[in-house]
Amino acid sequence: MSGVDELRRAAKLLRERATGATPGPWEGYARLPVVLAPREEWDLGEGRQRIAHMCMPYREERKWANAAYITLMHPPVALALADWLDDEAARGLGRPDNVAAYAVARAVLREAGE
Image 1 (cartoon, rainbow, N blue to C red):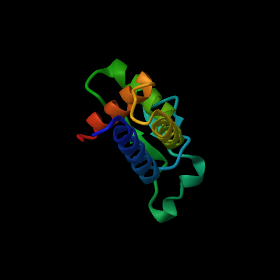
Image 2: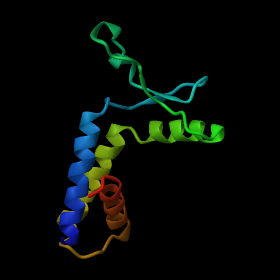
Image 3: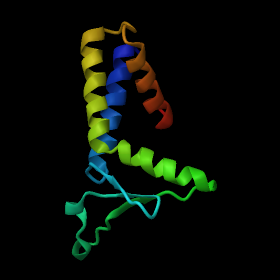
Image 4: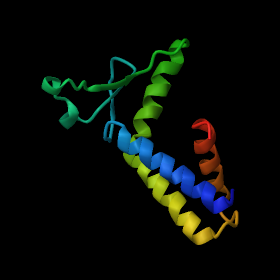
């Protein structure tokens, strides 16, 4: 697989996951380590819940950091990363000119098991 293909596959995967998730931006909650969906998504009549994710790892100190990080990386951030990867693919023509873009693409693809 060429570098350009790698960038484009990662961008496509980011877009798929971001558009499949609850739209952002997400919010944190001061009392619990949770990620909240935007207020307009809170409609219990349609079965939606405002809590998009609750962090409950085995280490107490990590759950707050995990919730803060997930909140920061809401779907619009992933969509912006996807645009950046596509731009680099169009500009790079397969050359590893932007080491950071290739590192992001490889991390995204590795985490997805691709």
